[in-house]
Image (cartoon, rainbow over all chains, first blue to last red; front, side):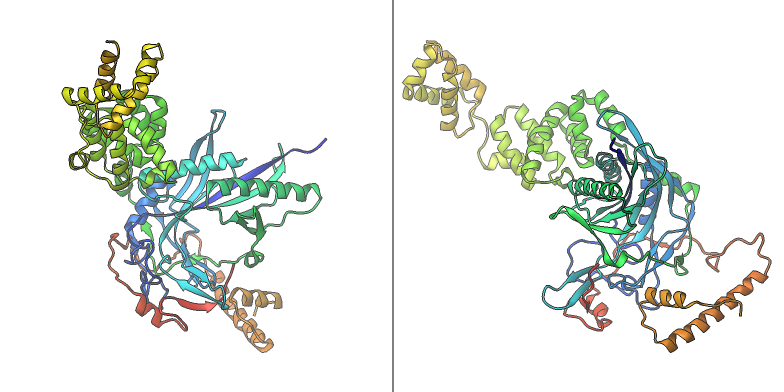
Length: 479
Length: 97
């Protein structure tokens, strides 16, 4: 009988923190600057320069730790991790080995069968990002840009508690949601503000021993993570079935080719010779400071869902989608506070917003329109100032350019025509011009009225009050 | 002279430090390293029971700054330190993986 295997997976997740400045100097972290414009002697490792810790980094790291049920290390410090590579100007990375800021946490993930499983977090530490290398296609050189050097990161190290790609993705989604709610990072895998390295080994199902693990890097999307986990699990099972050993190594995933290969430089186990950084004094997080951070924790998804249900009476399905993004939840709450019509606001988010996000391949965190303009649109529609098809058109402008709908409707003459005599005149004309449809309707084909409504709306450039048009047509046709 | 550095050790340290050592360099380095370790071994002669490990000499804690941008475009000064550069980046021998 064939053996059955299971994968044992732990994750190292790097998250770029949303601070304005780097972790140890006052250089900007803004994305997309020309190479080396956001650099100074500290983040390029010049002799004699001294790092000074950014307080916000400690607060974000502790906030993530609290939200993931960790114990906060109230006296922590930084260590140097020594290695030589051109993207690392100091020849060491400042990180935390001995006293990481957070330890022994967990997040609960919900599996597809509805069961809840805790994934334990071994530790979270603070560290700095490295620079970026760009390789020349023609010459035998690389170009070094230190703009990312010194950008603050937290590394979240899980225990090997996951057993499948689905569990890994559920864990990452949970982390992302929590961190986005905290505003500590936008957590975009594609843009590298969230990076996951997968440690994976396989063993016979039921065994208590661990197999030899590999680490897979370069995973830039949830789908890449899924494919890489499936491929690596299969590769290791094949090796074991063939009686060959799994080699402990770091592998780089190529998502286009659908396979990973061993990275050369990591074939030798690294000796990082960690030691406490003498330039950075220890960090004491007092009870008061910790309490202050705790008191600023936002309302997370679970609590929000409960409150929405009680306060707004919108369907559970809507609540789940809206609270899946802090941005969306913020817009919902703010717009509802302004117009007091939760169901209408929710409809705009659930239908048109979701449609446009999908169409433009955007994430809810990319939404830029203001809740105030959405609230105004709801009011305009509810008051009958514009009809629903015009409202959709106006919403698209709000979505893309955050226009003020009051001004836009006025300037573009989009107000609904509720004027009885103007409508009647157009309806009479349409009826006179479409004898066939009139005959069809009178002959029992009720659907024919839809065509006549459509023609009337078209003649009035979409601005007619559809309810009134319908009413008038019925009245005229039954004469 | 209790400590003896083996050929393998000096070879490995050379790899970590990305240094190519001549035979003569290796012999000198082996002697220097052994001397350093002997010196450190003096610590073993002391009674350190009950002494907390110390990483920093001064009793200073929590030196931090606010998250405010204070540095402008530093590229010109940064690139002055580059052995080789184009007008925006350091140029180094091609380094992949």
